[in-house]
Length: 372
Ligand code: TXA
Ligand code: MG
Image 1 (cartoon, rainbow, N blue to C red):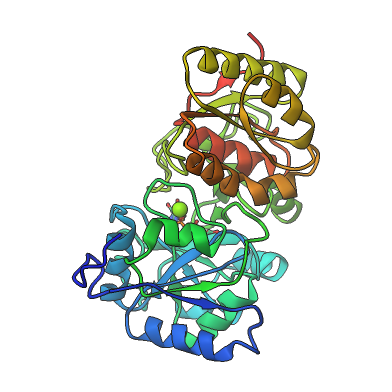
Image 2: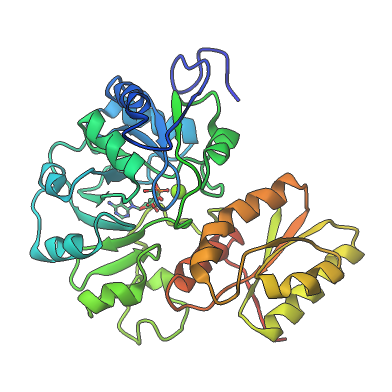
């Protein structure tokens, strides 16, 4: 925490928390936060995916504060948030027909489209690149804030760099209290994992980050969508179409979304995965480590019996609920002071692809196979 009054983000003394349960009823809180954005300050706000850390995207000084507050390298581009799809023309060079089609189908919602950057967006937002990621969030508080601010809002997830993304205002404060002007508290996020990032500057379009809109949904509209090579698991998603090459998303570092505790990830589902988690737990307990387990409801008993402190993720077949609870679960286990967290992936269908991506990165990319 930085309460000195001369922190890296400017003379912030404390972070104001404004609760917004209803955008009309709490219009004065939204207006207050919007005025802070217009003044170049940082405001964290709820979106349907995770909390974002917002700044006026047209103001380079404000945008620089995001990187300072998060301790994020300038090489990692930010997503620009709009309140209305019609505003897209203001932030990109041109709007291709494919973008219009996807926006009609998925906006407002958890889909970020990468397009050619427009002149209104400073290059600091895009890490010096000539493309910009844009989305219209579905959360009413996010849209009301952007509308009231009257500017496009650049916003990464509101966590310290490389840490787990926040899905409550409390998570935001845990990482950024005293470093930002304000957080709008709109309750827990409904989706729980970040937006899907789709690059439309290449043909065919490439999915750079799986997220709240599933690959299957995208392919329902655009059958040609490819999974970025660094995202492919060797599974069935791309066939052999994806070539090799440098990552197109500079921010897609291998270690990301990480809890403090070591994450021991088993890549698989079903009885073999549970058996592997129990074995990992027993081995860690034998080394006198405190173990946390993040598992679906029907696996709780087995992991508790093995000696783990367990956080339940909900029914195994409900990936929506699992995604909603995942990041909060990682933070809960960190707060409980465990040395390691055991967890498995949830397949690659639907939200399973995004869950697997985040868990692999949180575990720094070294999962164990579910079978010996
Ligand atoms: O759901 C979300 O997307 C949340 C909420 C707040 O909207 N935001 C979010 O932002 O997750 P952030 O900065 O934590 O992650 C954005 C990702 C980064 O991995 C970045 O590399 C990628 O999007 N990205 C942004 N602009 C890009 C661009 N022009 N080209 C390629 N990738 C880009
Ligand atoms: Mg992030």
